[in-house]
Amino acid sequence: MDEAWRAELAELIAIPSVSADPAHRDDVKRAGEWVCELIRRIGGSAELTPFGERELVLGEIPASDGDGSAPTVLVYNHFDVQPPAPLELWESDPFELDVRGEWAYGRGVADDKGQLWLVLKAAQRLVEAGALPVNLRIAYDGEEEIGGHTIADWIAQDERGADACVIFDGGMLRRDVPTIELATRGLVGVDVKVRTGERDLHSGMYGGAALNAIHVLTRCLDAVLAGPDGLLPEPLRAGIAPATAEELEAWSQLPPGAEAISEAGARPLDPKAGDEFYVRTWAEPSTDVNGIIGGKPGVRNTTLSVEASAEFSIRLAPGQDAETVGAAAERLVRDAAPEGAELDIVVKGSNPGLVRADAPAIQLAVDAFEQALGKRPLLTRVGGSIPLMPALTEKGIDTILSGFALPESNVHSPNERFLVPYFAAGIDTVAELFTALGRLNG
Ligand SMILES: [Zn+2]
Image (cartoon, rainbow, N blue to C red; front, side, top):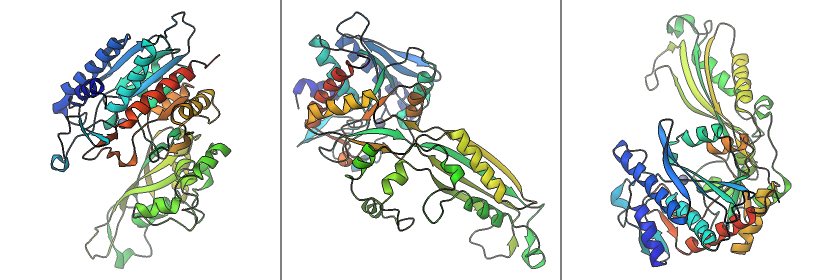
Protein backbone atom coordinates (compact mmCIF):
# COMPACT_ATOMS: atom_id res chain seq x y z
CA MET A 1 0.00 0.00 0.00
CA ASP A 2 1.26 3.45 -0.99
CA GLU A 3 2.92 4.97 2.11
CA ALA A 4 1.26 8.40 1.83
CA TRP A 5 -2.14 6.73 1.46
CA ARG A 6 -1.50 4.44 4.39
CA ALA A 7 -0.50 7.34 6.62
CA GLU A 8 -3.55 9.39 5.65
CA LEU A 9 -6.08 6.60 6.15
CA ALA A 10 -4.33 5.59 9.40
CA GLU A 11 -5.19 9.03 10.85
CA LEU A 12 -8.90 8.44 10.26
CA ILE A 13 -8.82 4.85 11.54
CA ALA A 14 -7.05 6.08 14.70
CA ILE A 15 -10.08 8.15 15.75
CA PRO A 16 -12.32 5.76 17.75
CA SER A 17 -15.63 7.14 16.44
CA VAL A 18 -17.81 4.49 18.05
CA SER A 19 -21.33 5.89 17.76
CA ALA A 20 -22.90 3.27 20.04
CA ASP A 21 -20.80 4.42 23.02
CA PRO A 22 -21.67 7.85 24.49
CA ALA A 23 -18.12 8.03 25.89
CA HIS A 24 -16.90 8.37 22.28
CA ARG A 25 -19.30 11.18 21.36
CA ASP A 26 -16.42 13.65 20.91
CA ASP A 27 -14.46 11.13 18.85
CA VAL A 28 -17.38 10.82 16.45
CA LYS A 29 -17.32 14.60 16.00
CA ARG A 30 -13.53 14.54 15.67
CA ALA A 31 -13.78 12.00 12.84
CA GLY A 32 -16.32 14.26 11.15
CA GLU A 33 -13.94 17.24 11.48
CA TRP A 34 -11.08 15.17 10.07
CA VAL A 35 -13.17 14.29 7.02
CA CYS A 36 -14.11 17.97 6.49
CA GLU A 37 -10.41 18.82 6.55
CA LEU A 38 -9.67 16.17 3.89
CA ILE A 39 -12.45 17.55 1.66
CA ARG A 40 -10.97 21.05 2.02
CA ARG A 41 -7.48 19.75 1.16
CA ILE A 42 -8.95 18.29 -2.04
CA GLY A 43 -10.25 21.74 -2.97
CA GLY A 44 -13.82 21.45 -1.77
CA SER A 45 -15.65 22.98 1.16
CA ALA A 46 -17.17 21.14 4.10
CA GLU A 47 -18.44 21.78 7.61
CA LEU A 48 -19.53 19.53 10.42
CA THR A 49 -23.07 20.86 10.55
CA PRO A 50 -25.53 20.38 13.43
CA PHE A 51 -28.79 18.90 12.12
CA GLY A 52 -31.56 17.75 14.43
CA GLU A 53 -29.99 16.06 17.42
CA ARG A 54 -26.74 15.13 15.68
CA GLU A 55 -24.45 16.55 13.05
CA LEU A 56 -23.60 15.78 9.45
CA VAL A 57 -20.60 16.47 7.29
CA LEU A 58 -22.07 18.63 4.53
CA GLY A 59 -19.77 19.71 1.73
CA GLU A 60 -19.20 20.29 -1.95
CA ILE A 61 -16.49 19.61 -4.47
CA PRO A 62 -17.31 21.63 -7.59
CA ALA A 63 -16.90 20.30 -11.12
CA SER A 64 -13.61 21.27 -12.77
CA ASP A 65 -15.48 23.13 -15.49
CA GLY A 66 -17.22 25.64 -13.28
CA ASP A 67 -19.95 26.92 -15.62
CA GLY A 68 -22.65 25.31 -13.48
CA SER A 69 -23.98 22.96 -16.17
CA ALA A 70 -22.42 19.77 -14.76
CA PRO A 71 -24.70 17.12 -13.25
CA THR A 72 -24.82 16.95 -9.46
CA VAL A 73 -23.88 13.75 -7.67
CA LEU A 74 -24.64 13.27 -4.00
CA VAL A 75 -22.09 11.18 -2.13
CA TYR A 76 -22.94 9.39 1.11
CA ASN A 77 -20.69 7.48 3.48
CA HIS A 78 -20.52 7.24 7.27
CA PHE A 79 -17.63 8.12 9.55
CA ASP A 80 -18.76 6.23 12.65
CA VAL A 81 -17.78 2.65 13.39
CA GLN A 82 -18.98 -0.38 15.31
CA PRO A 83 -17.59 -0.96 18.82
CA PRO A 84 -14.40 -3.06 18.65
CA ALA A 85 -15.42 -5.48 21.43
CA PRO A 86 -14.40 -8.18 22.16
CA LEU A 87 -10.91 -6.68 22.13
CA GLU A 88 -9.10 -9.92 22.99
CA LEU A 89 -10.09 -11.40 19.62
CA TRP A 90 -8.21 -8.69 17.68
CA GLU A 91 -4.74 -9.60 16.45
CA SER A 92 -3.77 -5.90 16.27
CA ASP A 93 -5.01 -2.65 17.81
CA PRO A 94 -8.42 -1.99 16.21
CA PHE A 95 -7.63 1.73 15.96
CA GLU A 96 -4.23 1.31 14.35
CA LEU A 97 -4.22 0.64 10.61
CA ASP A 98 -2.11 -2.47 10.23
CA VAL A 99 -1.16 -3.98 6.86
CA ARG A 100 -0.45 -7.72 7.02
CA GLY A 101 -0.04 -9.55 3.74
CA GLU A 102 -2.77 -8.57 1.31
CA TRP A 103 -5.09 -7.20 4.00
CA ALA A 104 -5.29 -3.86 5.81
CA TYR A 105 -6.74 -4.28 9.32
CA GLY A 106 -8.56 -1.79 11.54
CA ARG A 107 -12.05 -0.94 12.80
CA GLY A 108 -13.85 0.86 9.98
CA VAL A 109 -11.32 0.00 7.27
CA ALA A 110 -14.13 -1.71 5.32
CA ASP A 111 -17.23 -0.25 7.02
CA ASP A 112 -17.02 2.51 6.13
CA LYS A 113 -13.98 4.76 6.66
CA GLY A 114 -11.79 3.00 4.10
CA GLN A 115 -14.51 3.33 1.49
CA LEU A 116 -15.29 6.95 2.43
CA TRP A 117 -11.61 7.67 1.99
CA LEU A 118 -11.24 5.94 -1.37
CA VAL A 119 -14.26 7.78 -2.81
CA LEU A 120 -12.64 11.09 -1.82
CA LYS A 121 -9.29 9.99 -3.27
CA ALA A 122 -11.02 9.33 -6.59
CA ALA A 123 -12.51 12.84 -6.45
CA GLN A 124 -9.06 14.22 -5.61
CA ARG A 125 -7.48 12.49 -8.60
CA LEU A 126 -10.06 14.01 -10.95
CA VAL A 127 -9.80 17.47 -9.35
CA GLU A 128 -6.01 17.45 -9.71
CA ALA A 129 -6.33 16.46 -13.38
CA GLY A 130 -8.91 19.21 -13.92
CA ALA A 131 -11.27 16.44 -15.00
CA LEU A 132 -14.06 16.22 -12.40
CA PRO A 133 -17.15 16.40 -14.66
CA VAL A 134 -19.77 16.47 -11.88
CA ASN A 135 -20.55 18.70 -8.93
CA LEU A 136 -20.16 16.53 -5.85
CA ARG A 137 -22.42 17.22 -2.91
CA ILE A 138 -21.21 15.42 0.16
CA ALA A 139 -23.43 14.28 3.03
CA TYR A 140 -21.96 11.94 5.63
CA ASP A 141 -23.32 10.90 8.98
CA GLY A 142 -21.79 9.59 12.17
CA GLU A 143 -24.67 7.41 13.34
CA GLU A 144 -25.14 4.79 10.65
CA GLU A 145 -24.10 2.01 13.01
CA ILE A 146 -26.84 2.95 15.48
CA GLY A 147 -29.56 3.21 12.85
CA GLY A 148 -29.69 7.01 12.97
CA HIS A 149 -32.29 8.89 10.97
CA THR A 150 -30.54 12.25 10.64
CA ILE A 151 -29.29 11.67 7.11
CA ALA A 152 -32.71 10.49 5.87
CA ASP A 153 -34.35 13.52 7.52
CA TRP A 154 -31.80 15.81 5.87
CA ILE A 155 -32.45 14.32 2.44
CA ALA A 156 -36.23 14.59 2.93
CA GLN A 157 -35.97 18.36 3.58
CA ASP A 158 -33.18 19.08 1.07
CA GLU A 159 -34.47 21.11 -1.88
CA ARG A 160 -31.42 21.11 -4.13
CA GLY A 161 -31.47 17.38 -4.75
CA ALA A 162 -29.07 15.61 -7.08
CA ASP A 163 -29.05 13.81 -10.42
CA ALA A 164 -27.67 10.66 -8.82
CA CYS A 165 -26.30 9.40 -5.53
CA VAL A 166 -23.23 7.26 -4.91
CA ILE A 167 -22.99 5.13 -1.77
CA PHE A 168 -19.97 2.91 -1.17
CA ASP A 169 -20.85 1.11 2.05
CA GLY A 170 -21.23 -2.44 0.87
CA GLY A 171 -19.27 -5.15 -0.74
CA MET A 172 -18.68 -7.56 -3.53
CA LEU A 173 -20.42 -10.90 -3.65
CA ARG A 174 -16.99 -12.48 -3.50
CA ARG A 175 -13.54 -11.56 -4.81
CA ASP A 176 -13.75 -9.92 -8.23
CA VAL A 177 -17.54 -10.16 -8.37
CA PRO A 178 -18.72 -6.57 -7.91
CA THR A 179 -22.37 -5.80 -7.32
CA ILE A 180 -24.63 -2.80 -7.54
CA GLU A 181 -27.55 -3.11 -5.14
CA LEU A 182 -30.74 -1.69 -6.60
CA ALA A 183 -33.19 -2.06 -3.78
CA THR A 184 -33.75 -2.46 -0.07
CA ARG A 185 -36.79 -3.96 1.59
CA GLY A 186 -39.03 -1.84 3.80
CA LEU A 187 -40.21 -2.80 7.25
CA VAL A 188 -43.59 -2.79 8.99
CA GLY A 189 -43.57 -3.62 12.69
CA VAL A 190 -46.82 -4.69 14.34
CA ASP A 191 -47.56 -5.11 18.07
CA VAL A 192 -50.70 -7.08 18.88
CA LYS A 193 -52.29 -7.35 22.34
CA VAL A 194 -55.24 -9.66 22.86
CA ARG A 195 -57.62 -9.57 25.81
CA THR A 196 -60.46 -12.06 26.17
CA GLY A 197 -61.75 -11.52 29.70
CA GLU A 198 -61.38 -10.00 33.16
CA ARG A 199 -59.00 -12.52 34.71
CA ASP A 200 -57.30 -15.87 34.02
CA LEU A 201 -59.61 -18.82 34.69
CA HIS A 202 -59.60 -22.48 35.76
CA SER A 203 -59.63 -24.52 32.55
CA GLY A 204 -61.54 -27.27 34.31
CA MET A 205 -64.44 -24.93 34.88
CA TYR A 206 -64.38 -22.76 31.74
CA GLY A 207 -62.22 -24.64 29.21
CA GLY A 208 -64.27 -25.34 26.08
CA ALA A 209 -66.64 -22.48 26.82
CA ALA A 210 -64.58 -19.29 27.28
CA LEU A 211 -62.15 -17.58 24.88
CA ASN A 212 -58.44 -18.17 25.49
CA ALA A 213 -56.29 -15.19 24.45
CA ILE A 214 -53.34 -17.37 23.43
CA HIS A 215 -55.51 -19.30 20.97
CA VAL A 216 -56.90 -16.09 19.56
CA LEU A 217 -53.41 -14.68 19.17
CA THR A 218 -52.03 -17.70 17.31
CA ARG A 219 -54.97 -17.59 14.90
CA CYS A 220 -54.40 -13.88 14.29
CA LEU A 221 -50.71 -14.48 13.61
CA ASP A 222 -51.46 -17.35 11.25
CA ALA A 223 -53.44 -14.89 9.11
CA VAL A 224 -50.30 -12.89 8.22
CA LEU A 225 -47.90 -15.79 7.64
CA ALA A 226 -46.86 -17.36 4.33
CA GLY A 227 -49.04 -20.12 2.90
CA PRO A 228 -47.78 -23.53 1.74
CA ASP A 229 -46.45 -21.88 -1.46
CA GLY A 230 -44.15 -19.70 0.65
CA LEU A 231 -45.99 -16.52 -0.34
CA LEU A 232 -47.76 -14.10 1.96
CA PRO A 233 -51.55 -13.58 1.68
CA GLU A 234 -52.41 -11.40 -1.36
CA PRO A 235 -53.32 -8.24 0.62
CA LEU A 236 -49.76 -8.19 1.98
CA ARG A 237 -48.28 -8.55 -1.52
CA ALA A 238 -49.91 -5.42 -2.96
CA GLY A 239 -47.62 -3.20 -5.00
CA ILE A 240 -44.64 -5.53 -5.47
CA ALA A 241 -42.32 -4.27 -8.22
CA PRO A 242 -41.24 -7.52 -9.90
CA ALA A 243 -37.57 -8.02 -10.65
CA THR A 244 -36.58 -7.22 -14.23
CA ALA A 245 -35.30 -9.86 -16.66
CA GLU A 246 -31.79 -8.39 -16.28
CA GLU A 247 -31.97 -8.74 -12.50
CA LEU A 248 -33.29 -12.33 -12.65
CA GLU A 249 -30.48 -13.21 -15.05
CA ALA A 250 -27.93 -11.75 -12.59
CA TRP A 251 -29.49 -13.62 -9.65
CA SER A 252 -29.23 -16.91 -11.54
CA GLN A 253 -25.44 -16.47 -11.38
CA LEU A 254 -25.45 -16.28 -7.58
CA PRO A 255 -24.66 -19.28 -5.35
CA PRO A 256 -27.67 -21.63 -5.10
CA GLY A 257 -30.22 -20.45 -2.57
CA ALA A 258 -30.33 -23.87 -0.92
CA GLU A 259 -26.64 -23.42 -0.12
CA ALA A 260 -27.24 -19.96 1.34
CA ILE A 261 -29.90 -21.45 3.63
CA SER A 262 -27.88 -24.47 4.74
CA GLU A 263 -24.68 -22.44 5.27
CA ALA A 264 -26.60 -20.36 7.80
CA GLY A 265 -27.49 -23.57 9.64
CA ALA A 266 -31.12 -22.94 8.70
CA ARG A 267 -33.87 -25.19 7.31
CA PRO A 268 -35.88 -24.26 4.22
CA LEU A 269 -39.40 -22.94 4.80
CA ASP A 270 -40.82 -25.22 2.09
CA PRO A 271 -39.52 -27.32 -0.82
CA LYS A 272 -39.34 -24.34 -3.21
CA ALA A 273 -37.54 -21.98 -0.79
CA GLY A 274 -34.04 -22.83 -2.07
CA ASP A 275 -34.85 -22.26 -5.74
CA GLU A 276 -36.74 -19.08 -4.94
CA PHE A 277 -34.29 -17.81 -2.31
CA TYR A 278 -33.29 -14.54 -4.02
CA VAL A 279 -36.78 -13.69 -5.25
CA ARG A 280 -38.21 -14.45 -1.80
CA THR A 281 -35.65 -12.37 0.13
CA TRP A 282 -35.21 -9.49 -2.35
CA ALA A 283 -38.47 -9.18 -4.29
CA GLU A 284 -41.19 -10.60 -2.02
CA PRO A 285 -42.47 -9.47 1.38
CA SER A 286 -41.99 -11.83 4.33
CA THR A 287 -43.48 -11.97 7.81
CA ASP A 288 -41.63 -13.06 10.91
CA VAL A 289 -43.15 -13.35 14.36
CA ASN A 290 -40.43 -11.91 16.57
CA GLY A 291 -41.85 -12.71 19.98
CA ILE A 292 -44.90 -14.03 21.81
CA ILE A 293 -45.87 -13.47 25.43
CA GLY A 294 -48.67 -15.37 27.11
CA GLY A 295 -49.56 -17.75 29.92
CA LYS A 296 -47.02 -19.09 32.38
CA PRO A 297 -44.40 -20.85 30.24
CA GLY A 298 -42.39 -23.55 31.96
CA VAL A 299 -44.95 -24.10 34.69
CA ARG A 300 -47.36 -27.02 34.28
CA ASN A 301 -50.72 -25.46 35.04
CA THR A 302 -54.28 -25.58 33.86
CA THR A 303 -55.03 -21.92 33.38
CA LEU A 304 -57.06 -20.37 30.63
CA SER A 305 -55.22 -17.13 29.80
CA VAL A 306 -57.13 -13.99 28.97
CA GLU A 307 -54.11 -11.92 27.92
CA ALA A 308 -51.48 -12.53 25.24
CA SER A 309 -49.33 -10.37 23.03
CA ALA A 310 -46.90 -10.66 20.15
CA GLU A 311 -44.70 -8.60 17.89
CA PHE A 312 -44.31 -9.43 14.26
CA SER A 313 -42.58 -7.64 11.41
CA ILE A 314 -43.06 -7.68 7.68
CA ARG A 315 -40.14 -7.01 5.35
CA LEU A 316 -41.69 -5.16 2.41
CA ALA A 317 -40.76 -5.88 -1.17
CA PRO A 318 -39.47 -2.98 -3.26
CA GLY A 319 -42.45 -1.16 -4.75
CA GLN A 320 -44.69 -1.69 -1.73
CA ASP A 321 -46.02 1.02 0.54
CA ALA A 322 -45.60 0.71 4.30
CA GLU A 323 -48.92 2.38 5.11
CA THR A 324 -50.91 0.20 2.69
CA VAL A 325 -49.34 -3.06 3.85
CA GLY A 326 -49.54 -2.03 7.50
CA ALA A 327 -53.28 -1.37 7.16
CA ALA A 328 -53.78 -4.67 5.31
CA ALA A 329 -51.94 -6.54 8.06
CA GLU A 330 -54.12 -4.95 10.73
CA ARG A 331 -57.25 -5.93 8.78
CA LEU A 332 -56.12 -9.56 8.41
CA VAL A 333 -55.37 -9.77 12.13
CA ARG A 334 -58.73 -8.23 13.14
CA ASP A 335 -60.68 -10.42 10.70
CA ALA A 336 -59.07 -13.54 12.16
CA ALA A 337 -60.12 -12.73 15.72
CA PRO A 338 -63.41 -14.18 17.03
CA GLU A 339 -66.16 -11.99 18.40
CA GLY A 340 -65.49 -10.98 21.97
CA ALA A 341 -61.72 -10.73 21.67
CA GLU A 342 -60.36 -7.22 22.21
CA LEU A 343 -57.40 -6.37 20.04
CA ASP A 344 -54.97 -3.56 20.58
CA ILE A 345 -52.77 -3.14 17.49
CA VAL A 346 -49.91 -0.71 16.90
CA VAL A 347 -48.37 -0.49 13.41
CA LYS A 348 -45.18 1.34 12.44
CA GLY A 349 -43.42 1.24 9.10
CA SER A 350 -40.75 2.45 6.75
CA ASN A 351 -40.82 2.14 2.99
CA PRO A 352 -38.58 0.05 0.74
CA GLY A 353 -36.12 1.72 -1.62
CA LEU A 354 -35.87 0.93 -5.31
CA VAL A 355 -33.81 2.10 -8.26
CA ARG A 356 -34.86 0.86 -11.69
CA ALA A 357 -32.26 -1.35 -13.38
CA ASP A 358 -32.67 0.65 -16.60
CA ALA A 359 -32.16 4.06 -14.93
CA PRO A 360 -29.49 5.99 -16.87
CA ALA A 361 -27.30 6.38 -13.76
CA ILE A 362 -27.29 2.60 -13.25
CA GLN A 363 -26.48 1.83 -16.87
CA LEU A 364 -23.60 4.37 -16.82
CA ALA A 365 -22.38 2.86 -13.55
CA VAL A 366 -22.45 -0.70 -14.87
CA ASP A 367 -20.30 0.37 -17.84
CA ALA A 368 -17.93 2.35 -15.59
CA PHE A 369 -17.37 -0.65 -13.30
CA GLU A 370 -16.69 -2.84 -16.31
CA GLN A 371 -14.26 -0.28 -17.71
CA ALA A 372 -12.31 -0.08 -14.44
CA LEU A 373 -12.47 -3.71 -13.27
CA GLY A 374 -12.96 -5.69 -16.46
CA LYS A 375 -16.08 -7.21 -14.88
CA ARG A 376 -19.72 -6.21 -15.23
CA PRO A 377 -21.22 -5.82 -11.77
CA LEU A 378 -24.18 -8.04 -10.89
CA LEU A 379 -27.40 -6.19 -10.18
CA THR A 380 -28.52 -7.43 -6.78
CA ARG A 381 -30.73 -6.20 -3.95
CA VAL A 382 -30.62 -6.00 -0.17
CA GLY A 383 -33.08 -8.05 1.89
CA GLY A 384 -32.67 -5.70 4.85
CA SER A 385 -33.87 -2.15 5.34
CA ILE A 386 -31.70 0.98 5.03
CA PRO A 387 -33.63 4.18 5.86
CA LEU A 388 -31.53 6.23 3.47
CA MET A 389 -32.66 4.31 0.36
CA PRO A 390 -36.40 5.12 0.59
CA ALA A 391 -35.52 8.76 1.35
CA LEU A 392 -33.58 8.86 -1.93
CA THR A 393 -36.23 6.86 -3.84
CA GLU A 394 -38.89 9.31 -2.68
CA LYS A 395 -36.80 12.21 -4.02
CA GLY A 396 -36.38 10.42 -7.35
CA ILE A 397 -32.60 10.27 -6.91
CA ASP A 398 -31.19 7.17 -8.63
CA THR A 399 -28.64 5.63 -6.30
CA ILE A 400 -25.58 3.54 -7.01
CA LEU A 401 -25.17 1.40 -3.88
CA SER A 402 -22.02 -0.65 -4.04
CA GLY A 403 -18.67 -1.19 -2.39
CA PHE A 404 -15.43 -3.07 -2.11
CA ALA A 405 -15.72 -4.96 1.15
CA LEU A 406 -15.71 -8.76 0.90
CA PRO A 407 -17.66 -11.42 2.79
CA GLU A 408 -14.38 -12.21 4.58
CA SER A 409 -13.80 -8.54 5.53
CA ASN A 410 -15.10 -9.24 9.08
CA VAL A 411 -17.40 -6.26 9.03
CA HIS A 412 -18.88 -5.67 12.54
CA SER A 413 -16.48 -8.37 13.83
CA PRO A 414 -12.96 -8.49 15.28
CA ASN A 415 -10.08 -8.14 12.78
CA GLU A 416 -12.10 -6.07 10.31
CA ARG A 417 -10.07 -5.90 7.12
CA PHE A 418 -9.99 -4.61 3.56
CA LEU A 419 -8.14 -6.17 0.65
CA VAL A 420 -5.19 -3.81 -0.05
CA PRO A 421 -5.36 -3.97 -3.89
CA TYR A 422 -9.01 -2.91 -3.65
CA PHE A 423 -8.01 0.57 -2.48
CA ALA A 424 -6.42 1.26 -5.89
CA ALA A 425 -9.15 -0.67 -7.73
CA GLY A 426 -11.80 1.21 -5.79
CA ILE A 427 -10.28 4.60 -6.57
CA ASP A 428 -10.05 3.67 -10.28
CA THR A 429 -13.66 2.52 -10.27
CA VAL A 430 -15.05 5.57 -8.50
CA ALA A 431 -13.03 7.91 -10.78
CA GLU A 432 -14.47 6.06 -13.79
CA LEU A 433 -17.93 6.25 -12.22
CA PHE A 434 -17.80 10.02 -11.61
CA THR A 435 -16.50 10.48 -15.16
CA ALA A 436 -19.37 8.42 -16.56
CA LEU A 437 -21.96 10.27 -14.45
CA GLY A 438 -20.70 13.46 -16.11
CA ARG A 439 -22.71 12.27 -19.13
CA LEU A 440 -26.00 12.26 -17.17
CA ASN A 441 -28.59 14.70 -18.53
CA GLY A 442 -26.38 15.03 -21.60
ZN1 LIG B 1 -21.50 0.81 6.90
